[in-house]
Amino acid sequence: MKNTIALLSAGILISLLASNVTAMGVQRDNLPFTPSDTPGDVSAIREQHLYDFQHRVPISPLSIYHSYAEMTSLLFSLAENHSDIMRVTSLGKTYQGRDLWLVKLSDNVNQEEYEPEVLFTGSHHGNERPGYETLIYFIQYMADYYHNDTAVRDAINSTEIYVIPMVNPDGVEAGTRKNLEPNHGSFGFSKTVTSIGVDLNRNYAGPWFLLLLRPLFYDSSTSYYDRSDVYRGPHPFSENETQAVRQFVETHNITISIDYHTFDQLILYPWGDTRLPTPDKSLFVSIGENISKLDNYTLEQSTALYPTLGDVCDWMYAKHHILAFTIELGTSYAPENPVLLHKMSVDHTRVNLYICQRAQSIAAQR
Ligand SMILES: [Zn+2]
Image (cartoon, rainbow, N blue to C red; front, side, top):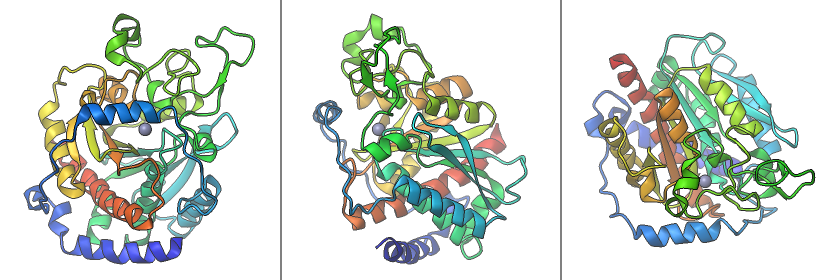
């Protein structure tokens, strides 16, 4: 099944890219334009999300998604067959001992070059499986079509592309939103284990004190209660996974990043913790509108979905000035329909290629 999808996908993507080479070129205005859907009823979406936080998605044994072990062997075999442009390294280990894989795609892959850097991350939330699956597709496409596809070759030759496809492999394997780290009370002071797991996309540093000052504003999207499915952890960067992402980001110079989640067909930009705009709002909107032309998703500031504290995008932008987006893929947490998953993967491979191209023009101006 996976091979069939891969072959089918590759063919369709080649024809899409061939018919739209300018999409990845300098003339951004030539992106194929499809009007976005009008924004849905945001309050209904928000309620659905808060409800879904409490419900876990079981893993089907016949799933169309790669397991962690399958992903690991695929990444290493790709890296072995494309050692000139692809490298896999570990950023550290999870509580259960799984490596957090970092993929680098670039020419002269073993050197640090002065090229714009981009970062794609997936599945901070383990039950949101398309996050990593679309990135596996992207990696495979980039490795396989480097010699046959101009857009791929340009991206690999002119950017340093980093991918952390599965930020929360323990959660992916367990089918849980949170990781599997045992909690010792909400603030870590209990001698006994009181619950399991931290919401990794609430564990990044930020103005954490605001949760005490404005509890109603953050409502149930961010919690200091350890049993909550949106528990942010005892303190910022308390988790192995977020420490690994921090260590990577602090030692690189990322221009644009995308963090892939499911679901709602949204493109979100900072801030997520306040309704105020960022100083770079027009740049976020300019990039986001072009993404929207490729995936037909709705673009909005992160708070329009719901305010959160401690998410990766706010931290990346506030601390490192990275143009950090969240994309909420699809219309369910983990669709088992291969056609849907395939379309998501193709669309966002094109989005990622556009990000590589845009990072080059932005880095040239900075
Ligand atoms: Zn998520």
